[in-house]
Length: 83
Image (tube, rainbow, N blue to C red; front, side, top):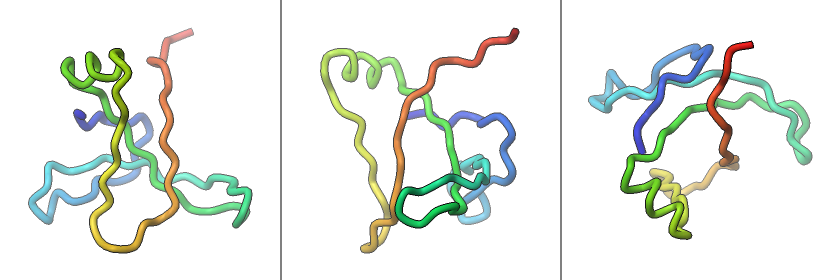
């Protein structure tokens, strides 16, 4: 996956640690369990090979560093259009 610059990003994570840098947009989301919670949203674009794999029935995988898995959400959106 290719990191995308997310519209309205509020900060970039990881760059000072040697990573590429991940633009995030801080938001408040409504959680059915905990009510309003702080969230960080990022945007990703599949490479042509990944898109081919997904179109052939492949899956999206998420790797979380560490041993404790935080609550997450994964979804897809179409491209933004003007107008």
